[in-house]
Length: 386
Image 1 (spheres, helix red, strand yellow):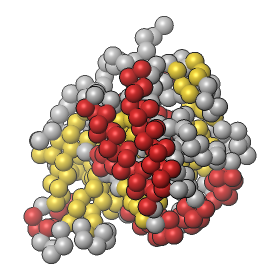
Image 2 (image 1 turned 180 degrees about the horizontal axis):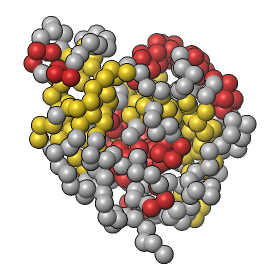
Image 3 (image 1 turned 180 degrees about the vertical axis):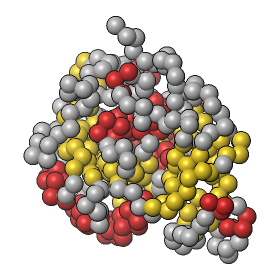
Image 4 (image 1 turned 60 degrees about the horizontal axis):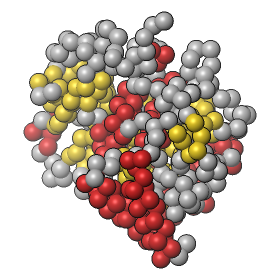
């Protein structure tokens, strides 16, 4: 696309969103054809257990996920959604800052962990390779299509590196979020799903808040509870104004509750950098007028993930690095000194002890920055029992 057209279209989109963001109705959503459809809270497609149906590989009819449920909805099911106060488990990745290489052979004594500023004792420690539950979340909105043929080939090459026990689901988003294919194993499923990916919609939005909320919701309902949960967003921008529906904070809380690590893959081009720069500037200006926005990089940092970007022809290597980083992590478990079951957010800070930092190349620890504690009594967000 002509770069000048990118500027014009993106500026128009940014100004349009900025002028209308405060007027959006939380109960309306824009359909594929641009029409406005009435949406009611709780309008998720459900099976008998109250969750999103888990599609079979041969089912290619996309499902629109409304994402209107409150975070504490009672139909969320098992206690493994909220991390128990009795035992908190987190994954950590240690890399060299300059080279990006993974650091292995660290011990429990090399880590210092604090919760809300209080030192915690690590009782479980290992460096393992858990199976992965991956949601590929592909952006189909905006001026530029980030999912070119080169990016598609890099994605397929990355799938080749997955192990038999890993599972992958495919979702797309623009104005709404669509589940293309549910969790399953095997490259052929995702290959067929990519053939049914919705077309790029140049006039559509990048509804990050809905996309993150709906991906976390599906991960929580259908993902392997014993695996390492990952949401990989393929997009050309890193921030966007919130659309109607769950707020950025509600999406953030849903991601934290799901136990997912958020990562981003950004195909880097001149036009992409231009669009991303304009959107970041527009979001900054919008913030002065209380317009809310969602930020991919911030969510990745908070969940211990990373956002990688390179030219489309180099994304094969980038994807490979990302899969390697996700698979090889330290697992740490501790019993919190805070025994309250209040459903509150607990801040975590994991650092390396000084002896472990004696290397000439500074070591960086990537892990989630907090978790949601369990709660004994019903949350104020829970639906009343009839």
